[in-house]
Image (cartoon, rainbow, N blue to C red):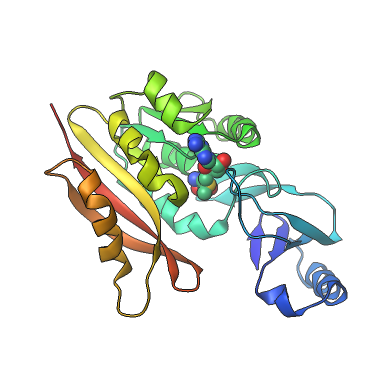
Length: 261
Ligand SMILES: C[S@@+](CC[C@H](N)C(=O)[O-])C[C@H]1O[C@@H](n2cnc3c(N)ncnc32)[C@H](O)[C@@H]1O
């Protein structure tokens, strides 16, 4: 089960063996036993589509899909039906933010409701975070969240396709680029590299890696990307982020990309 603000989400496979009546009883029990949950939903589809959304079935409590979600001292308005949101990236948000140095320029290519961007802005005082998402609802929530956390001077929400936005206006600006969308990691890596300053910088590349027994997922991930980045670049750190399916892992590579000038 995931808890997002005051919403509880009962997920597969927990509800796989339960019928709707069982789920509703479980949901009512959750509302009775906890003081902070006001609305309970069950997932009705896997994460899918360009916007990485699920569909949900309402089970009990308020029939409301938006909430205020708190992470690392920041507050986010999110709507589980309209924007990708998972509490399972909590550690990752803080881990990346802790690497950002004051004065850096950051491009977040797949920003969702702005969690990485705003946590970075609050914790590390970069000069600028360009925060891109193609989903209009994510963009609108991001604007609200930037205001909610008083980081209007740092985070600039941008609505659009990250590749196009970088090509049109973010060439050579960034010290650091975040790519938190495994589906597009390899296809959009050339655009991430173009966003970096000529002296190079750091790219955080998120990938889904199939790792049967005996395969090291981190080594496999590095082998997947190392020929697509300039010579002289090096892997700073690799970590398993979370399991995403049978023998499928989300991993992240922090790569220091060598500059061209
Ligand atoms: C996994 S979610 C990002 C999660 C977010 N970084 C967080 O920490 O909560 C991926 C996001 O990429 C967005 N997206 C998908 N294709 C895109 C594209 N071509 N350009 C920009 N954003 C895109 C989706 O709308 C979605 O919000």
